[in-house]
Each structure stands twice: as C-alpha cells, then as structure tokens.
Image: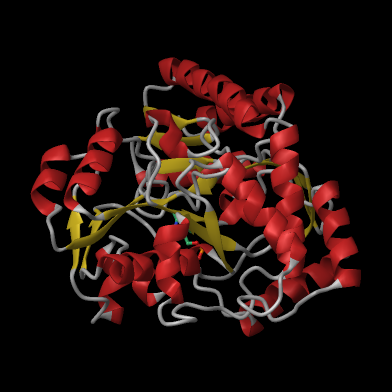
Length: 405
Ligand SMILES: Cc1ncc(COP(=O)(O)O)c(C=O)c1O
C-alpha cells in the first residue's frame, strides 16, 4: 500500500470508526500469519500478544482458513438452538467435552467472551435460586452490564451504575475472605484462575482447591472465567488443572474461535438443563454459528494434534527464564510472573513501561498492556511460537530494556 493511501486510512479511521483509545494510531495492518504481523508499509513484527490471547493456533492458520472456506460454501447460518441439529456445532461441543473435566459435558455457544460471562451469571442465579454473586478485586470479565457488574475497576463501572445488584468483591487469593463471604445466599463465585488484565496475577497454590471446597460445601456454583487462560495458554488445557480443580461452570472465548468471534460456557447437563425450564430461558441468534464452529473445530483439532498446551509450557519456561536472566541485569524489572505463555513483566513505573513497549515495537516486537496494572507488560504470543522466535523476542526485549535503562 502506498504512503498516501495509508495516511488516508489513518485519517478516515479516526473519522468513521468508533474506537475508545485515542487516535492517532500509528500503524495500518495488512496481514498476519502465524507469529508475524505485517503492516501496510511492509514492516514485519514478531507477535508476542496474539491479538490479546486470540491467535493461539497462529494468525490465519491454514487449517482454520480451509475449514472456514469449505463451510462458507456449504452452510453459513441456520436456526440453531432447538430447531436444527448442526453437525459442525455438535462436533465442536464434543471436542470441548473431551478436553475438559468429566462434569463439563455440555456447551452453550456465544459470540464473545462477555456473552459467555452473561450466560454463566444467569445460570448461577437460575440454577441455585439464589441472588448473591461473588467476584474478585482486580478481576476482569467484560463490558456488557452483567460482566461489567462483576468487573472490578471503579473507573469503568461508575458511569454505568446502577449495575446488577447483589455483587460483592473480595480480595483475590485470600482464603479467609472467601470463607467469610461465601454463604447460603451465594449463587456463584466467578474468578479468573490467573488474573490477566489485573497484571497476570497467579493465586497461591492452596487457594483454588479450598475455593472449590467452599463452593461445594455451601452450594454455590464455582465459575471459572478462562476466556483468556483456557485452551492451552498457561501450559495445561485449562488453567484450573494446575491445581486439579474443575469449576461447575467454565467460560471460554478468545482462542476458541481460531481467530473468529466466539465464546462458550460449559457445565454439566444437569445444571445447563435449568435453561429448558421454561424452554428458551437463554438464547442467542448467532451463538454456535456453523462457520464459526468450523473454525473452532479446526483450531481445537490443531491444538490437540500439535500438543499446543505442551508447547506453551516449554516455550513459556524458555521465555520466563530468559526474562528472569534479564532481571539480573536490569534491576528496574520488578517481577516476572505467570504460567505457560501468559506472562507478566512488571517494571518499576508505568512511564518506563510505556517507553519500553514503544522501543520494543520500534525494533519489531508487539507486546501487550494490562488494563489494571500500567507498569506490567503482558506477553501472550501464539502457542505455536518456536524456540528461535522466543530467542529473537528476548534479544529485542533486551535491546528495548537497554534503551530505557
Ligand atoms: C478474562 C476475560 N473475560 C472476559 C473477557 C471479555 O471477552 P470479550 O472481549 O470477547 O467480550 C475478556 C476480554 O479481554 C477477558 O480477558
């Protein structure tokens, strides 16, 4: 694309597209394949954020692309829930049931992560007949009214109040707080097993098993928001597996669509059957759309065959060890934390973090930010990333750290 056309796109983006981050944006993206994003001026970047944990199977994965093309020619959309059986939807749900815990047998498909969260909250209230929802400080679950109601940061919540009532926030990874807060009025406890937007915060090892026990003892549904941590990202298929914990309800999004917009929530047949009474108690037009399911099925099959959770564990170890080695040389690195390929790199202040990200981008590496932790850079590359690409990323990160030291 020539420079004049690029400049025009930048201008017209600010004029016609409603985005909530301030213009001007600096780059016009043209293509993305695997772990490489190519801008319209031909500049290539190593992608260490994957469109915020989306492109786990690599951008424009050829198997996903082929499945989508085939499906588009056959069936794009039909009435889904309760009218027709859509084979590709059944195949996708069956695959999901095979890779999750034995209690998570059924899937309700949605179009995004936030819609999956809406479904989980409604399910908890309807199934238990209780009202109270517990959620975590520094947690993030989305921006629609229900998910925003269980999302922590005041600045994002306040302008939209009143939100969903009977929501209580407790500190993350604090067993005593959970023991005090969960009672026989609690419908559900929603938690990210690792808080992603909160700055990649990993709970203490005792926390999740105890939270599981508390929910079981007191009759509240345990809801894991694995929109970001699910499907191999943290080095296990699902993040709760690090502590051998399965929730009653599991929310998924981001990587589940292989790059197409999709979300889902899973639970037992018994719990999900509450939506049958009365019939159609929860429904969506596009959830489980045939084309999106074709993409998802191809992506999950690819993840299984290529053992992407294992690659996330190995490459995550390489990246984390590399960053910890850099911490010895650059004492302004305060912390390196995470699991698998969900890694937080915390510097000593937000200004330096922003300069560092810009320096890395100038040198050809794309990094992510954390919505609630301005000093923390998030790394969440495609799970197909190779050892060589991690080494390349580390050496550019080293140069960018030098530039801001
Ligand atoms: C943990 C978590 N839950 C829910 C969401 C909302 O997903 P979506 O943006 O697809 O609505 C996000 C998005 O970043 C997320 O990180």
